[in-house]
Length: 191
Length: 191
Image (cartoon, one colour):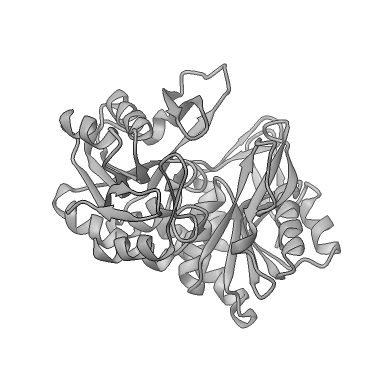
């Protein structure tokens, strides 16, 4: 999506360790007018799939998911990160490793809000190693719901998450695919 | 706001310890169509205040803030909870005590996104003891920005946050004011 690529080139910054900093418009300060345009792209891509629930993970996916949910006319469910040990039987739980924070989270959703009849679209801001998205897939599987696919704002194609999850059959619509980032701050996109 | 009160009576549940569970529509599963109606109320209340930025705190305020930001035509900034010790000079930081989780968080926003020229509306899902809202006020103060007020979905009037912050001069527009909750699950609202 040209609009998002141009915004990344204008306002994004390459940082050490393969970090792409886009917190001026995507995941700290959030440009909700841009989000509405991203949402429209996902809605076009998944218009025929009868999505009735959007699932994301806290925290930075929530804004995108809510604006996307307006386009689909459905509610959002966000998976919560927790370190609570005594999780009762009322939730589905999975483990997600955060490479950014160097730790493993338990991630939960309440069973009552993720149903076998649901047709679920996953939404998140980034896809890199794919740990968060894989965790969301696992929650949908546990619920016996139908996984329609995933809408991602920025995919880092040089990290393995996208290839691995597509090989598992997940349909992923990434709106900007970063092919490489240079030490000089340059960013190139995959077609 | 009658619509929100009716939704709380229909789908909310009173739990032990003064907990009002509204995670079916407000802060786990999120009804974005309802959110748009809440946003319209806040927009009416603060229409004359030239709000140009909405500030909230992760995670459950983000959805409401993004939908509200559409009504105001402005971006959202969400304060992040962190336990990182080595916070550099690029952020404003404050401490927020979570009564729910029994711990204190450092909460940060990047200085570059909260400016002295900003006219800031705070948005959050709940106001009870007021710790989160007070932390957000402190961040706005540190930035030298103008604090226009706060839009809250559910205020628990039997907890001290609202009275304390109003006494400090904060304008708070709460859309449902819970006056009391009974052991029998009953909920009454303040006018």
